[in-house]
Amino acid sequence: MRAYQDMVFSTAARLTANDAQAQDIAQEVFLRAYENFERLRASPSAGGWLKTVTTNLTLNHLTRYRRRWRFFSELARDDPEGETPETTEPAVATLDTLFAETNAAERRELVRQALDRLPEQQRTPLVLFHYEEMPYQEIAARLGVSLAKVKTDILRGRHALAQLLADSRADLSASVDRS
Image 1 (cartoon, helix red, strand yellow):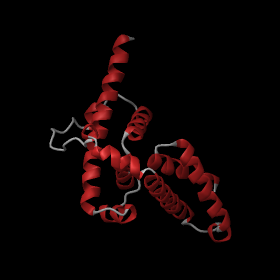
Image 2: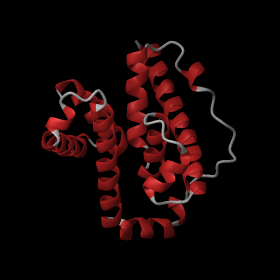
Image 3: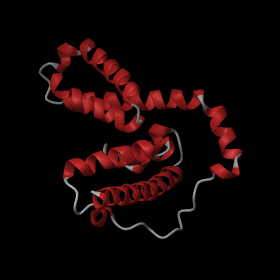
């Protein structure tokens, strides 16, 4: 099970954007693995089982958290300053061209930081689609939202992520130029 620690934690951390919550979820995942140890010990699909349990527990956690703070989010929706930007703006340059001069480790860290800055309703479907490779329909079912909402949130999340990454790249270039 030690071989799966990083995978479990990183899955939970990507979805929650909170290391403390991810640690709690990872602990719960490994408690469940301990309860099923005899069955998992020799199973070639133990990694898949752990990833599924991690994803499910994280989504359950996010649902509970979302319900807990629904009142505040409804207030924010009534606030005209909190409106979601239109998706008809021109697309930001492709990420390949933005990060052509950065190494893979730097790119991963910049993407992780940008994902952490996205709102949950954009980050969660993006992570499920791109990292967990879930189809739109399954994401919609897991999150309890419409297929159209999932598609919209992923589209808006991609635009926001690209903008955050472009800003990060500009900051990175400015710091290199000052050196």
